[in-house]
Image (cartoon, rainbow, N blue to C red):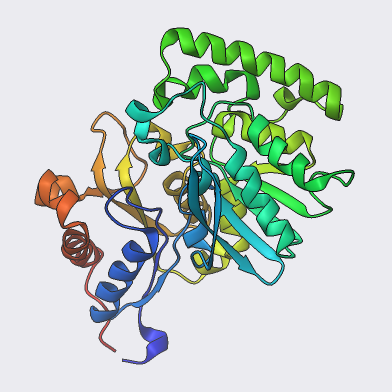
Length: 344
């Protein structure tokens, strides 16, 4: 069979949170597909939250910064030439604070995220991508701005660099405590106090920068870090669309006969700014066949394309503990469902 006669598969997944990275998922699917006679390409993606680093090739630097509980943490980030990629979760992540149960929602700071931006500026970055997601903080970005101010002195906070904030939500600044506070361990009383603090911080930011963070979609991401960076001169964008455009997703879709995507758990949020929904939307707009492979799914959520859940096919325990083995088996079955591979 000639190479050009082989059907083309594109695997463009998000991470399977806690069990497999997007690169691991894409690699397993591409390997199985190649063995079955497909021309297979893997394209790990991110919606701008955790996994952004990996989508651009993974971390190649580490910097010790202030963690969410004000203890030093070693944060990974990436620098390619003058382009830096950082994730707020690496510096200010909820997992670093011990999860929702270990987090002090009122104390948690975003300072480490600002320190990572400073590290990128000092390393010569002229373009910085900041992924927001998985943070412990609800400080309205005060910590991040304090770190930037300590570095900048009389200079502009962002040092003349182009800073793009990749958000996977459109939540506004003043809503950050109400929407995300409970996920970060905040009690109802704490949510109220955090909301009051956000309102006060908003007023201060308007006074200092002449721009209202509440006007920016996605400004509530990472407890308001999105809004704080926006008023300081950053651009807040849809994380999925920005990553997809930079990595050339549309060109890959144009060459694919079949598109697979996936994530750890499919639920209603999967179709609201996330990788799975974004890949489906773009693939269908180009008339491409598309299916989804996930670890688990909410049975109440109806998807517009076929969904294959590892937990349903292999059992929940195996799906969690042997994700890649289950994924390989399911991929083989899914590809078989699309008809026999041409044999030339």
